[in-house]
Length: 332
Image (cartoon, rainbow, N blue to C red; front, side):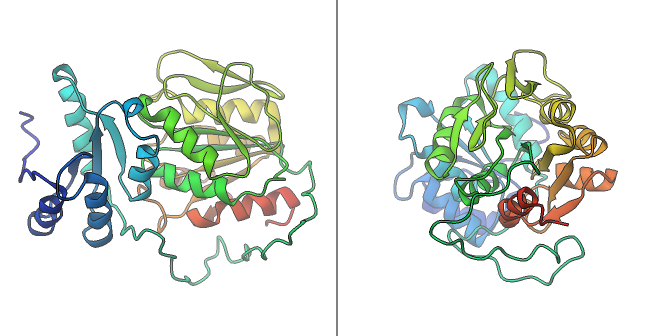
């Protein structure tokens, strides 16, 4: 019904969907999960490996499905997840389809390792960390007080790798804003918790920021640092269209932790988090942005780099290693 959307074709199963993607070359795909012959997640994985295309996965209420649905969909390269809409919600689906149609996606080979790239001026000094000994020495505390992560479209996969790669003795707490549909918030946190050595939980008002703990913002509330060592989770209007707001978290962290704040901005559309990164840099903290070659959507990190508020541009696979170096005082 939307005059700006042309439906090129409709597939009745995943196998047809893969074939039609190859022949019709759509700008965006809406993918059901439960289909005969080949299910939607298998089809999405094949499409992202052979014909990279933005995919919006539509499913029934995730609380009535297998808990691994969310991470399976995100792991194979889907950009966004939505509960199948009621009739009155179709306009919002149309808006998201148009938004995703403009995203440049990258080939997604599950389990494939990226080829080595030539060093750049932003990362040449960040050499890979050696394999840790069975009982590594504890990281020095004091260089980093709080790590704040801003992430949106395409970000869950990067956040998952970041948290999975951090050591259990990482000496600072982390606070994360990841834009995701509210229905999938709990299963996202469950996935992140299951693959990390750190304690990952959905943030609640008054939670403590303690080393080894990761607080994830609820999908329908702002997460901010209220006082040293505690967070606030508050309802409120969206900020520049975002609830939760990445910039709200980063700005509040800069006020409380000052130069001991590290801000990380990952893949995502728009500019959410850019003002917050600027506040951290102004307070003397360190700022990181995901590199263009590793970001599904370069909007947020690109805007931060263009504004001149980024200290280090880092490949998405290397963010955890850089954070460890910052905690040790090794990163330049």
